[in-house]
Image (tube, rainbow, N blue to C red; front, top):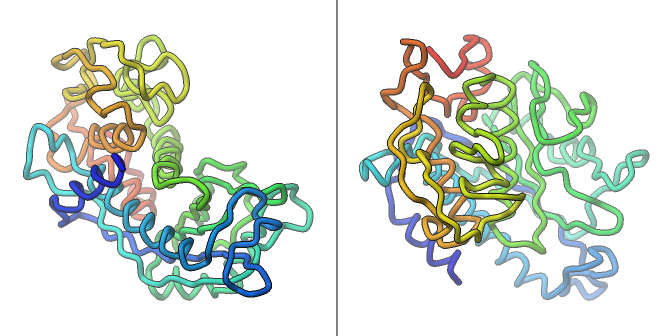
Length: 315
């Protein structure tokens, strides 16, 4: 209930953005013989009516879009007019009433090559500009989803084993996110944070390390560690710490304030949005070694152009 109220509030906020992210959604619902129920013999741990699961996935897709867009606003708690950097648009949704194709040789892995071949992913990526493919499925005894997986002419930078052959390579970069519909929308957004971390750690060097900090000396933290976190997933820690997450600067410290889990209501989804909002956005006004910081969301909004320009986190 708390997450729904939070996302409803986000949906009423600013929506114009710098980069459009077209999304293809693929859904797998293995059903019982009557076609009415999710087959728990396949999913192992999630059932219920097919109609209810379709509605849940529809709702969570919308909620994930809202959270990701609003998370891409730079410090809106200081500037209420801050615009999102990312504008997600679901271009098409394809639904299969069957199990997720399993890889014939990789234990517990889906066959992503087969999934994307079947939908003609090349058409969607190269002709319709799809940048992300969201797969709704399940985590069963047979199949464990890969949280994020990039396919790019410039290499795979993602939260995966970075197998160069597990996805087809097209003319432009796209990222696959495989969600588990047994869980709630916070875990879908969680996958995106790990992708952001993977890309920023690859291209951000010491500057990104300064942004995150490390346990015991956190600056803005990361997906698993809020600024006052003492262990992974410590989102409900009531202890206050002096933090400059809302005024992070690459040289020295910004203005610090006492922050505890009250800032994100002890809720992991609200922490994810709050954390993303610390990532330097448009006209951030920050400098590192007398050079202005770039628009960091460019690495998520247009990876190919950013890679080809050899852009980093400093202009």
